[in-house]
Length: 198
Image 1 (cartoon, rainbow, N blue to C red):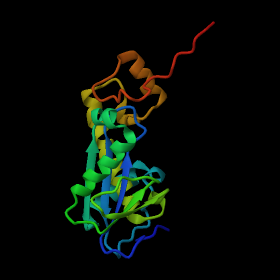
Image 2 (image 1 turned 180 degrees about the vertical axis):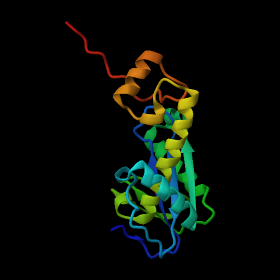
Image 3 (image 1 turned 45 degrees about the horizontal axis):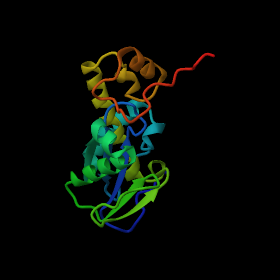
Image 4 (image 1 turned 90 degrees about the vertical axis):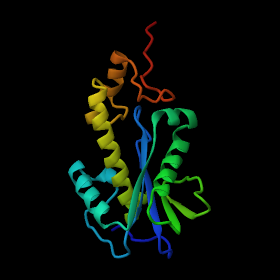
């Protein structure tokens, strides 16, 4: 059972990101402020939900949250500042876009860069423990998936509609066959090293 709040602060916002391990595309993050009485038995860490449930929950979260927002850091910025800093920046951008100022932030994971002197707590596997982080994980994931499905039409041949830019076997093979696209992260290991035969 997911918990409503970590702290006693009124505007406690949950944050999470999606796409850190991908070879292509931006990293997306979301920030969500839920009402105190929010309850949904389906809500869970986005990785534990079917695609259908994620999209059902996306609509519910957008309708019932007090405030929610998404932040994006593209592949060029990821290459410039590294994926960890890009994840923090995406979360900061999501928080920037909120219509309500947070009093406290709860962050999925074990590291975060302080945001405007607002107190925060990092929670490992927070998306499986707290509703607002789970809600943020769902928004980050669904917005990123939608983006990669659109980009699959622009850059066909990498099967992004299915693999969403993650390092699947078919994605790595497509990079070997087609080369890299403008959306690939050049600082990542895009193809597996070839085995040398002696």
